[in-house]
Length: 108
Image 1 (cartoon, rainbow, N blue to C red):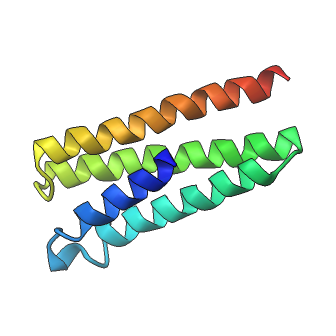
Image 2: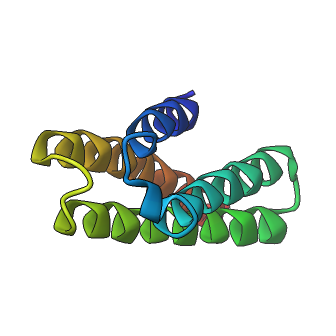
C-alpha cells in the first residue's frame, strides 16, 4: 500500500515537470517506479528464499535509483524543497521496511 501511495504521489509530481523532461527524467522515474512494483510483486509471490532475495535486492536498486532521480529533480528545480522532502520521506520509509524484509529473509 505504501508503494502504491509513492506511485500516486510521484505521478502527481511528474505531471508538473517541464515538457522538455517528459521523455527523459519523467520517463526514467516512471520506469523505476513500475520496475520496482514488478519486483515487489514477484517477491511477494515467490516462496523460494533465493529468488525472493534476488527480487528484493532488485527492488532496492530501483528505490536507490529513484532517490537519485528525485535528487536530480530537486537540483534542477523541477520540484520544490517541500516536495523533495515529502518524496524522499516516502522513499526512505519504504527502504526501511525493505531492509527489515531482506534481513528477515536472510535469517531464515
